[in-house]
Amino acid sequence: MQLIPNQLVELHLDSPGGPQIYRTRVEDVYDDIVVMGAPLERGSVVPIRIGTEVTIQFKRKGPGQEGRFSNRAVVEKRFRTAVPLLQLRLLGDWEKTQERMFVRVPVHIDAVVVPVQESGEELSAQTGLILNLSGGGFLLRSDHPFQIDDEVRISFRLGEDQIVAKAFVARFVPTDAGQDYGFAFLDIPEAMRKVVIQFVFRRQIELAGIAREDIT
Image 1 (cartoon, helix red, strand yellow):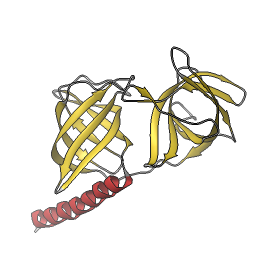
Image 2: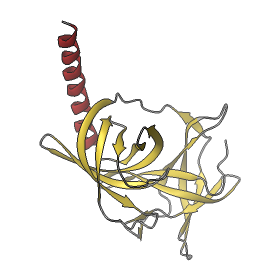
Image 3: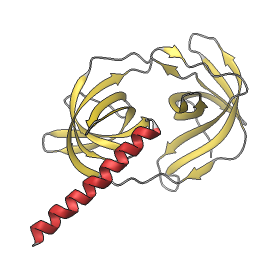
Image 4: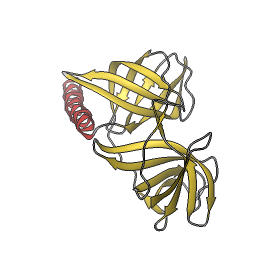
């Protein structure tokens, strides 16, 4: 298993505020060395110390190679070039990981979506409608012309709880009117994910009750 330049990857690391996930791009690869763009947050470089251990993950598509792969790595160098870079050394072999499968339920939830550029700059807020929801992501109907891998900050309410998370476009879903957008959560606090999963569970029970009423 080999990374290639320009490949998008996720960088998973622990921080005082909890686990964080950043998306970045591979710049160069040789032997067990990977050079990638330093992750950005709101336009600023995320400070990652030399010696920090991280997990690199990426998703590959193709016959016989489809799946999500991960490897541990340690940050060896930082380069303050025009495009800030990190040099990492892989600590083991690439392993195929099991993607978590979450149950999706149909919903109609109003949401506020803020597109985020690669620099971390946020664009104007957009309104959207969540059509289905799971602990892993959601289906969004929006007039904004999203592209695959576009990142957003999304906010919506589930009862008394306000959910705020980062997500990225994972797929297009064709419709009669155009297309909806399948998003995967990129960065969501585990406490908020639990709220989403509990909501989905209650919604499943509600829908099952409605189905039984229709049968009788």
